[in-house]
Length: 551
Image 1: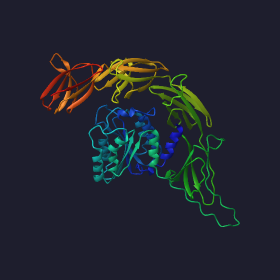
Image 2: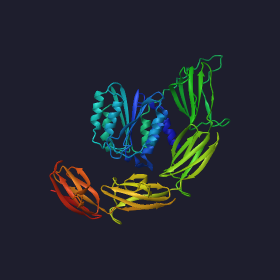
Image 3: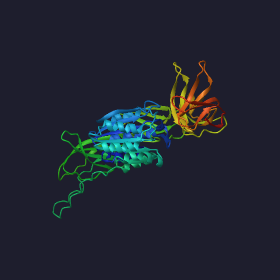
Image 4: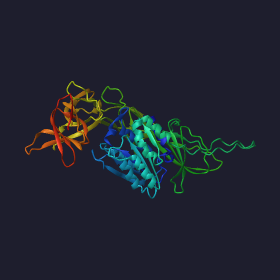
């Protein structure tokens, strides 16, 4: 996995030159924080893949670019107004954006059209050049028209572009939002998994500025021939160590008069042999998270072979869900080292600055943390056991009956023990059949929701468990038709002491299908907002489908 992260970092190092528009004066990145981002691709939540890709991109963006960050669906579960500009466009915002993405929740709806509109307005798109980059795993769920918005923004903007990354969308779904990018002259990129996401990003990268061609060889003369290259640096992990020739990278920048970085000249990998024009440069030698920087002054006719010492070591972490289990490919591993941090997944290898290393392994809802002292040039290999059990949750309309094979089914695992206020601590969420959870040993309750059916089922987990949890909904399916109706409402059959019935749900239109607990109900057809109602009683049996027409 460390190799994958290095590959992404390599491809994105010149991101300021790509079609995503980071070379623009101001950019706002919009991240989809809806609840569907908890879904997994190849065993890893989409939100984690998006966070890691975003963090990698921001590490390579020039420090003077003004980048902003917006998200929707991260604060409120059912609101179409949950849109927030978290980090306004500003230089040096990479750390703030990464921190915001790492800490936000993913639980709401997908008002992507309104979010792009707000981002354009925040960038003053009618006055200045503006670029918005939207990363979404879902389609508009709040009634917006992304195609129409694209045309509107292009027509009224000075130089407005929207680029859209459809993460985990099908080809048909992608067509429904690609028009937002196309109508503004932007690009739509579809990424169905982690590898495809990487390839999509690499595809947009412009080639780096080539090094100046060496001058023609001089005509034969008594003087010695000039060296082929004038700059051949080398890098070592620790003082006195062997040179690193594979997996390392070189970044070369022009040096400004105040000693800071200017324009980027090149990025190369492995052994570097090149020719640099006379002038002042800042050269960075790095391997994974370890780096060393030197200011180099190149003079005509001279050769330079500087040595870069990373003062770093290598950590190899083998994560395990429980004692004696195989290495977990679903583990997230956070390395906190002197001066920074990085995240890897699965069997992890990281080159980091020497010193005290805090290693946290997370598998599902379980974590384990160890501190390792790493000396320069040292390689440390460790097995870390998190101590979690595995549970697969499925819902059935009745015990022993048909499985609820519906992507809309939701599972929330909470602690069984209630807090002093009567609430329970939420542990993890998932959607759809065969929802998988890694949980620390404890007593839990599975809160299962399918349409109008809501069921609580307790269960317990021990380290190393592999359990199949079957939740009986004791529910059936009610298919309702009310020709010409303004809305359809389902009420309890029993009236309260004031003669009122409890409303269980309502939809607008003349047809509706819902899973609903077994029992007696009343279905009401509303012909207008003011009244004109028609009622029909109905009895729902567990595991059965009931179809009614209210006329």
